[in-house]
Length: 318
Image (cartoon, rainbow, N blue to C red; front, side, top):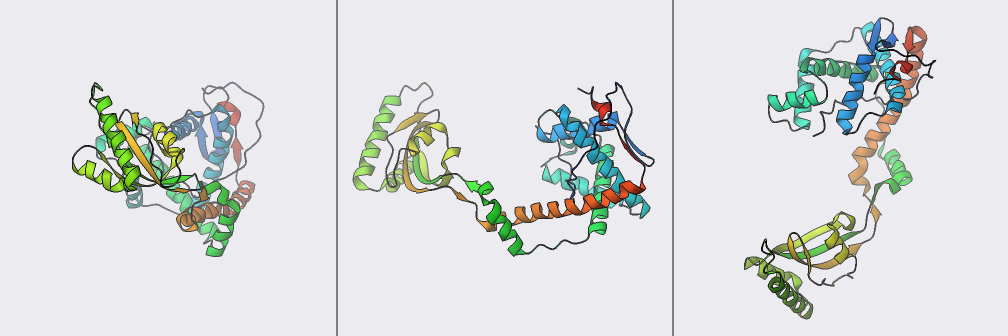
């Protein structure tokens, strides 16, 4: 099971400081912004959280960006402290509850287990969430609202719609006839399936014959609706790709039993409708605009603050 996913920051900061000369260090200060510091242990913890979220090991080459993002974050937290922005315990507790709901965590024990999988304690999680909410609030204050019109989103959709293609789809009717665990009745069941397919091809009413078999308890099936062909089980996909609209496959077997399918309609690849993507496109556009604005804010903060980064200290981390 993947670890718990922290609330995403609105900013997605880019850029990184160049590597300094290589040093060997067991522990040290990797990021400093005025009096705020993050050690190698802190950066390792963030890497552990990322790995837990993605379910993949954190790559060594990604430490450079991780350190730079941490420095930008500390700059924003320092600015929030200057402005005396505060986050209440109620807000933090609400964020914890939101995480539990988003991750479908049934009870406290399961939640603690997920936290351990991410290398976190409850108090550590609350501290991270407090910083996350504070950063979001500071960004909102510094950047303000960034209105996005539907026309702008539609323009983006037209430019990027190739990214949102849906593969070839098919509208299918199907039946699955079960077979005994020892497959002793396989031939008899195949013969019954062949008779059903022959009758359906002759009558042109596969659906009615399937409904009759299902009602008699001889199988399960019906309208599968519209499905992406590539997502079908291999044996079903192999049968479907050979069919033209209206055609019925020969019976074929799988671990589930004996199948027969009718292709009602084949739908060529096409982009998802704008209406389905509008929310996603709006969030992407908003993220990019915030990133652009907040990068300029952080650049100015770094001129006023003492900022040091030492990503080379993570070079020996495995």
